[in-house]
Amino acid sequence: MSTATLLAIVIPIVVILILIAAGVALVKRRRSRRLQEKFGPEYDRAMRSGESRREAERELQAREKRHRDLDLKELSPEERDRYATEWRGTQERFVDHPAQSVDDADRLVTQLMRDRGYPTEGFEQQLRDLSVEHAQTLEHYRDAHDVSLRNENGEATTEELRGAMVRYRALFDDLLGSGRPPHHESTGHDAA
Image 1 (spheres, rainbow, N blue to C red):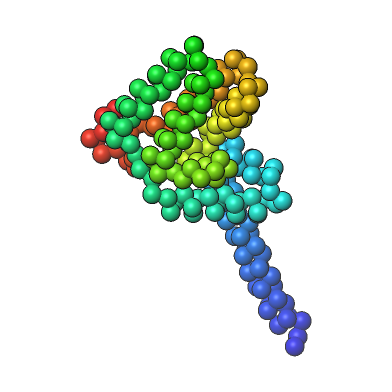
Image 2 (image 1 turned 135 degrees about the vertical axis):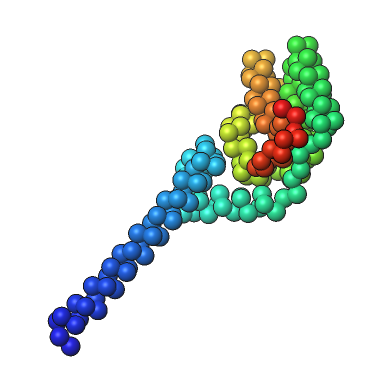
């Protein structure tokens, strides 16, 4: 086989391999960017806790898959009003009973998750499930939960308890939502 014939065969193969590699790299960058945008600070946390970017991104994609399989629902306006009223009562009781109010806030947030369709079998699983749609408020939830655990042992200060209430409120508001179905266009029938 002549050199010209060999080059005519090898050069196109090399070009095709380069194009395939560039395409794969582009797909990976797009996937990474999409996951970063969707998970926000949870993406960074996954990167720090995983052995590799690939492993961390697989974990985040597994969370998305599990989340798609959940039977999540929006609350009715009546349910949302009931939760808002319960929260106001919990918050008002904080002045006289801060430790009990933080316990009540933790239970109220867990019940709200359950009523929305999130499994509540364990804190770490709750975090993974919530991270798909509520990643921006998860650090608040982690911090509040840590204070709640210390509160159970009588180790939390009143100022820490106050901070926990504020942090629980961030997730509570995020979970309570607007009453509109997530990720859907408004039909014009929704109340603002």
